[in-house]
Image (cartoon, rainbow, N blue to C red; front, side):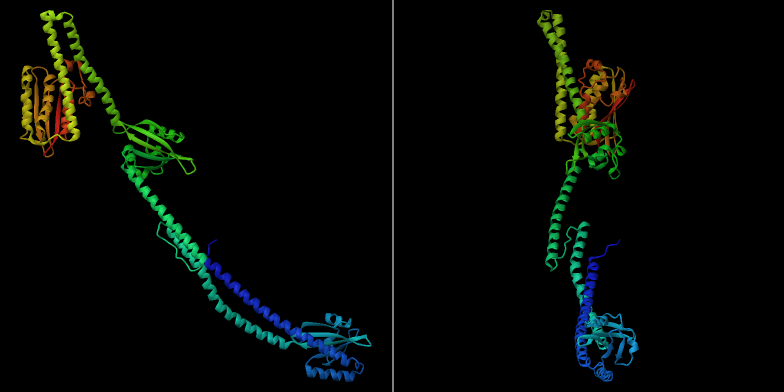
Length: 588
């Protein structure tokens, strides 16, 4: 059923109430006038009837004189007079039409009069087509009943008065309605408009117009309601502003976090995700909202973790492995979400990418193990030969000299490891602090100096170093560090090349990059080792590397020198054919 406005509830009610009041007042006025007139007429008719009964009763037997008096009385007063015998027969009628009163028995007022009690009545007379007032009084002689006088008078005058009154009452009622209905309309609008304005303000407030306020009317009750609403709107606006600010701050915090934050409900449907979780999980933020997590992220470890987080009341933590372009390890923290009544409604998952941290931990463990192992070998050798010398071998000149040469060689190896470690540490510290001085320089000159440095060792192994340069390439370089990197590559190429082979060195340059390439024709490196050859102390062939005097840090130093120049180093190798190492430097 359609709802109506309050105005259309109030105004019809007021209009009906006014109409009912006008009708009631008119009806009461008519009733009062009619009753007053009838009461007066009844008293008058009763008095006339009693008078006639007293005056004419004694001469009732003398009909002629009685009839004459009765006719004269009717002519003078207009009241019809009839004499009814005790048996109910009409003995005389002043109009000489007794047939109209033929058999009048049965009329209550006449029956009462014949019984000795005066009575009156008002009835409609069809013959006269109007109402008539009837009065019947007993007539007796010597206190014996002898009949009744029956008087009747038409009420035409009363009916005319009542008709005029009805007309004027209708006219007055219409005028009253004409004056009262606009007032009722105004009163109805006065009551409805404040509520309507309050409703409009509430609708605007509900639509997000936080500045919407209701006008304050003059009526005290409506004004109090409007002021209460406006106070509520002020408080609501203040709280909404605080919530918006908190929400914006929360969004800013979540957007700036490197950790992924993922919220799901109790059915594992995605509630919200921050940019970091979109990036880590490869999600489409617009499509993920409201969908089950298994539909957008197909990872069994993560699904199991979220199921545990929803079931466990306490925070939980575990590592989750994500598969993609590369495997990543996520440290996941999960805790349940609760509503205001403390019921669990979902869970929040925080994902922290610890892939590099785990890799660095692994590198650190390997580094400690490798350093310990690399240092232990020369130290053990030195200690053993010194103890042998102290046990008496120092008195044998031949053994003493041989042992001392071994001690010297192991000391040199130990010194080389420590020097490389110190050099690598210094390069890393300078790289982290970004205080390595770089300036435009001729790369060809640096490479030529490195070739000249390594030439004696190559000549000793009957290895030729062939150098080619594409013009005069220029880059922002630190000449000493870059030369050290090239020397390390050349030293490895010479060490791992068989005698009589050739080592090629060449440079190239274009608009964006300068490269330094060192290629050998040695044993080559298997594919599974290529991603790790630049790690500290990583050796493809440990026995051969130690035999050739390598420290296992040369390529790590080359990698960090390249990074200090904002470049990189790559390797391309085929087992049994040889390897090519390339330093990539940004062009000037």
